[in-house]
Image (cartoon, rainbow, N blue to C red; front, side):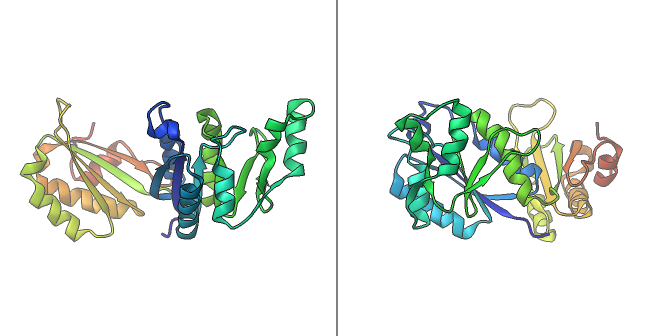
Length: 267
């Protein structure tokens, strides 16, 4: 299965300096993962229009969808739209349709500062909300520009991700009560034997019932299950603590996960 590729750009001096805790990346990552979109790269940038423009142009050329957060507003450090315009070699212009919408929401004429938020590249598209949704989204080509306000990102992330959706990959997470360093060779052999499965290995130091977590990610459940079974046999069936399945058209759990691992110890 060919999945759409995404890039995420987080913008703001306040994020890099830790004056504001970054709260949007996890939201976007979860939305893309839940809709089967592969996030390929994340960049966190300062309020530097030239640097933002360079990264936006690069991401827009390499990925199917790009989302930026932050730097959208009326103040001196809100540079994202100017940078996006620069990335696409366009000028900013006052968008009458945006002014009209903002005036309606404002209940009256806009101030000069508010009008700055309607300065957009002329080719910017307005994606209006559907029933049950709030607010419009703005995109230029494959670049979606969001403010940095977490509540706004939260209600926009799924709306964007679902436009590029595929069935999420199947993910099996297995936990073992053995140290990773004892079974590195076994894990390496399984990885080599199953190139179509993305296998992750993670040592665990703060749990009482397991010391190793392996993940198996594949477009087909059967592929992940075969790799899981091989890994469990290589590590030692007696070391398996449990298996949890997620993803795919329908998440798979319970007895099926135990059967896929070749054991009845799943709990």
